[in-house]
Length: 189
Image 1 (cartoon, one colour):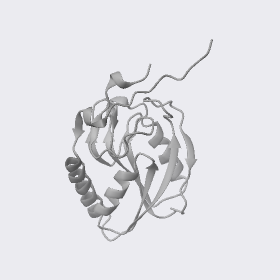
Image 2 (tube, rainbow, N blue to C red):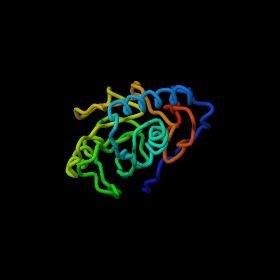
Image 3 (cartoon, rainbow, N blue to C red):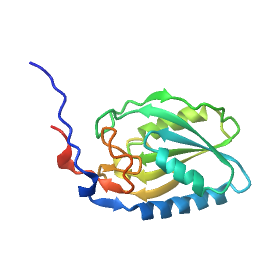
Image 4 (cartoon, rainbow, N blue to C red):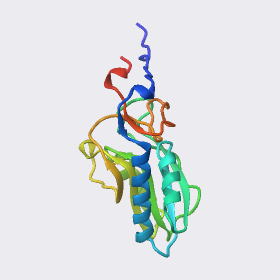
């Protein structure tokens, strides 16, 4: 008996329902940037993006923040090619520069179960930053398994799988400008 990988289906993004347009995303990102600018007036901050999904949001957010900011990246794995987190978080790439005594904001594409961000928060606190906050493009509170909240949230969404604006399905759709609902029926069986 052979075990085969289910065939994945990749429908065109243009056929998927738009949840948030690129204009809505840009507006919310500017608003969060203004809030962070006010919160850190006269200070420097380090943005730590969670690869790969948060790269686009981090780039747009960094440009919207009007205080001195630098950024670094971490990479973790908890999904693989699945649509649901495995629950086990594995660090693939740590930050490159020291953050001790610095104001740090972890930037994530989506906060759902909270397992990844809880893990990363604990890891970053070991580096002894002056402060540590979380910014996320999307928040799915219905999926939370651990008690963690983001300090800056662009949009709260229902428990639906989304793609675009850095978020993927099996590494596809990251470059889609809008955030779109991925159809349940497109999942391989």
